[in-house]
Image 1 (cartoon, rainbow, N blue to C red):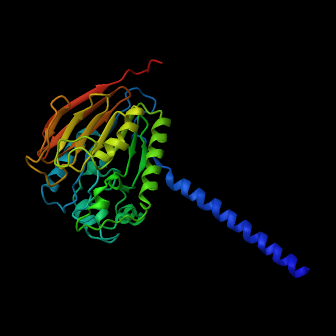
Image 2 (cartoon, one colour):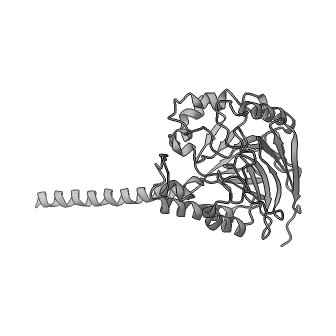
Image 3 (cartoon, helix red, strand yellow):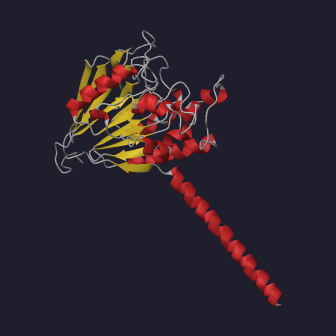
Length: 343
């Protein structure tokens, strides 16, 4: 009898541990499904002031160890940055060519990032997403804490939210949306760790993006991804993002979608919503004359060369400027919102 009682006790303990493990695993999955939120308060700027200014640069498709005019673009970013009192820099992906990083100790990190963006104005946080070329290497390496220790500016996650007071910026992992990387990868090998099963990964990301945007009370909502939703460049529109992501952005009154991937600078408006599309993929190698059909009713600006963009945000106004490799302002655009929304 004593033995049976002991076995029953052990059995109950095993069941309890099993249930706890199931609950724990479910909790872990829930945590993984949610978008991590980072906080960035503009330095030395009043959080209560209507003239609160958020200032940042955007550059993409840059990591070529200084070649293809990467160093020249970096120099002009530093020069322009001095005049804008930057809070941070955004990278739209394809951070390291041609096949991302081989691992945490890959010297390309210093050769393409630390040793290139040396200007004092660029010694700010770099909020970064992955591009398709980054997935061709060790995709997890770019999100490692080790790289953050090597260069404290480096902040790279697959998808996350940046709460910057006057604006919320939603960074999304767009590479897994593209069917061709899975069905026709050609001779490329992609690091899909953490992505499979793909359908569940994308479903969670779309659900979390929609929920986060819906709950956001920020005056300005910005979404950043590597691949374009609308583009006149080499790659053109991304059908998967048009079908799955664009409706979420429009339903939640997103103001701007910012991307790289096409090696150019462009500004495209939307005919059916206030949403504006900005491509900043001119960080190094550019594709001269390589573009798809342009809709003159939507395209406000297109430059098939290297460069970057700046964005300055107050409570009621946003100004965007595109710069070329010589630091010349090629395109300026601004928009405004009333200080108090009418209910």
